[in-house]
Length: 205
Length: 255
Image 1: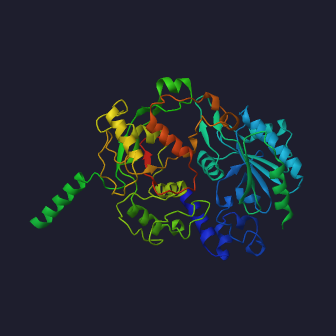
Image 2: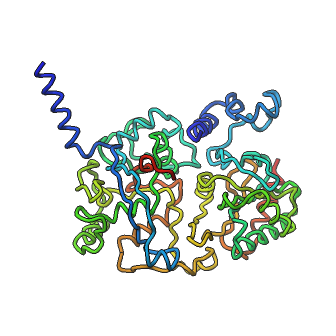
C-alpha cells in the first residue's frame, strides 16, 4: 500500500498536469475531471500535500493533508493525554488564530499517539479547549504516517516507557499549496509575526 | 560436464566466502541496548530490550542504489520532490543514472525518505536507533564490545579521520556477522528524530519530559557523537558521509 502511495505521489509530482487528477484516487468519488480547478495543478515539490497519510478527525471522518489545499493552514503535532506542553501548543495556536482573524484559516493537529487518540478522545479535547471546530481538525494516524509528518515538519519525538511522548513543540504555517511559510518553535512564544504571515498568505488569491 | 560441476562448486564457494554480498542479512539479537540517555530509571538500570531482527550485513552500495533509482525514477536526482531530498541528493553522481565512481562504495548523499523508500522496495525497513545501536555495540568477539578500550578507541579514531571511500564489506564481521557499522559511513535510522541533545539550553521549554533525560555514561563518547549527529539531521538532509542499510523483522516474529 505504501509503495502504491509513493508511486502515486511520484506520478503526481513527476507527471504532466493531465495525469495529476487521475493520480488522486479520491478525486473520482467527489467530482468528475471537468471540475478540478486547483487539484488539476500538480502540487509543488516542497509541498507537504504530497504526503498520502490518512488522518481520522474528531468526527471520525477520514481526510488527507491535501484536503487543506487552497487555505492557509496551521499544523502542529501533539497528543491528547499530554498535560505539559500540548495544552500550551493549543493555546498558542488559539492566540495565533485570534491575531490572524481570518475565517479561512484552518488548523490541523496531528497526534503522535494514534493508538490512544480515538475520535472520542479528540472530540473531548476540542470541547475542553472550546475550539472552533469549523476551523480545527484534531486528527490521528498510523505510527508510520505520524513519523513521516514529524519528519517533514522537523518535529523530534521519543516514546517514553511511562506512556508519555517527549516531543518538540513546533507550530508550522503552510501556504495554500502546503509549502512551509513560517514556524514558531517552543511554547508561549510571540505569535504576531506568524499571524501577520498567515494574514498575508490569506490575502493572496 | 566436469567443467560445469567445477564452475558450480566455484560459485558455491564464492557465495559462502563472500560475506560482503550486499542485501545479505544477519540475525542480530535478542539483546539489551543501553542507551546513552535512558528514557526512565528502569531503562537506565536494565537497558532497553531489543527483539531479534535481521540487518543487512553491509551498507547499501552505490550499485544497489543505482538499480533502485533505475526501477523507481521518481528517486532520480533530477526528479525527486524537494520535500523528500535536498539539492545535494546524489550530487556526487556523474549523471542521474550514473554514479561515476566505484559501484561497490557505500551510497551517500541520500535522504531519510530515499533510504526508507529503498528499504521498502526491498521488502525491508530502516533499523530503529535501538536496533542499530545494539548491532553496533558488538565487537568482533563479543555482543557488547564497549568494555574493551581498544575497540572503543578504534571507533573514536575513525570519527577523527577524514572519510575514505572504499567498497562495502571489507571491514571485519562483528559478533553478529555484520560489517562496516563503524569505519565507513554514518547511517540513517528509522527514528533518527528521536535523538535530542538534552543539554540544549532551551530543552526544558521545547521538549515534554526533557528533565527526565540524563546521560547514562558520559564516557561513551562514540555513542554521544552518533546521538549528536542524529539530532542535527533533518529528513531531507543528504551529506557526503551519510549512508544506510536496511533491516527486517526476524522471520516469524510479529512487530
